[in-house]
Length: 294
Image (tube, rainbow, N blue to C red; front, side, top):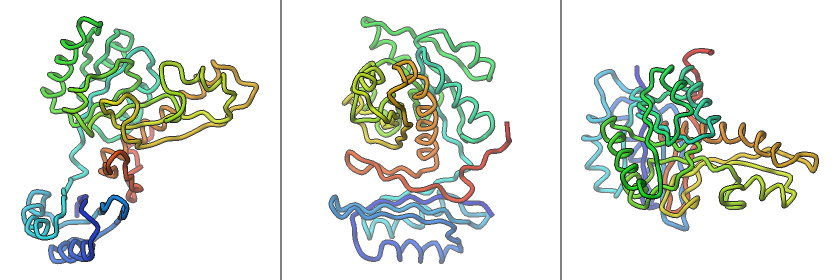
């Protein structure tokens, strides 16, 4: 038997969980994992379920049969097949640690996505990308060519059918138009524990302030720079003995982990947008498993 994922959001009301469970039971489905959260302040309810299905059932057939219930109760819902891998475009500039980390996780199956291309405004990582049999697109970005560059980037996204753009230390600010068109589908890694120490050199700022914790933040990209809904964060301890260069080196590992976890949550349908924040449910059993060891 195969597994499917159901995601649901609605206003907070009595009976939502019961209606969903009853529907799946009548379809012969068996719920394997379930998470839910009610935001009573914003009057929003969120739910994610993984369940087993009969061989003839598909996300399309289940959606069609569930639609009348959703209309009656005001639910927004979707059924997803985890076997259908998300198509991802990675964008990178001159810092390659996140790109290399994602390529490794992708290669061993720890990040089950289909990387359909890498876009960069520099040529530094062409060879490593091509060696992975992934298309590499060099698009130079200048003040005068920014609009044309973004148009070419979006053409690649559309032509490849990409579901998600990952900014793996891509050091260019995206336009409002691109952010709006890809709303909820661009994930960035910020080399700081937002909302503190924003800007181009947060590690230097952290060093100057003598912080004892440094971190990284992965968030959805919006028109407001570094203000998008946060998906994942982590930290590492430092002491007075470390210098600013140590901060950068230590921070790289945190950035890798935080970005990978954010992408993992997104592609497994565990992230729900909730106004300016997110609801991120834990992974279902088996979702962290890799296809091979290395």
